[in-house]
Length: 312
Image 1: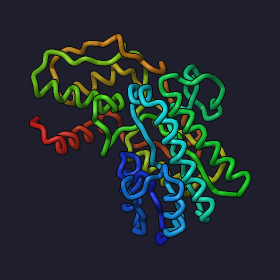
Image 2: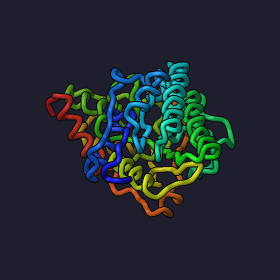
Image 3: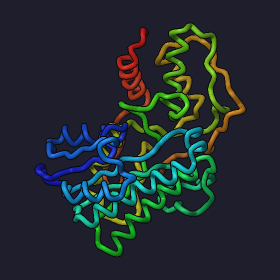
């Protein structure tokens, strides 16, 4: 990407989009075009077409999406399918029509079959049934990958896809009804510490294993791949290491300094038993994650306490 290039980061206020924006600014890119969701509804095809025709961005990072945890995914199934498909269809097609040099589509590790072998290799896509609770979101993301490949095949567009593992970082969502596991644990342990509560209730058994990547590492990987990856298919982005939710909870508990007990709500679903990314393709291209999990959580917790106006 040329320093003077006009770059559009769709979803620039979200955790992923804001991290990519910070990375671009650190690398000296100043010609960034941004629109909030209130300024540009990416589900509106005409609005997206008008925006691309007017701004003519050279490069696009498609990080805009409707996202959430297990409960949100399972509750708003129609919205997760409709909104995400509309967003990516409109942006990808408008990028083609308006001659965008390169587009990166960001998906999610939930695209893989629920019982796929571990670690998850890129070639396991569409080899089995999806996890039912987030199937609509996964189907939308799979459609995005295939759409980028189809536009590459038919029109010669340099549209690439990346699949991040579970993410955390600045501008994460801490709403307990809609958040992912790590921010939910941070908020629960923090509030329990403030209230001197005797215990914290965790969803499920805590036995599933998960991998976590700091959003700043993801942004660094996306910037790297925008320079070095130009193929169909997609690239997993992760650390290649995972831990159980119980181990994660104990780490968060220790970082926050909460002294009470952990209890389990076994009426809540566990989700997929394990989701560890195979990152050999990414490592082969020349990129590895740098931010350790404990270091990353400590950084995120400091940011959380600053923004929550809470007394620690």
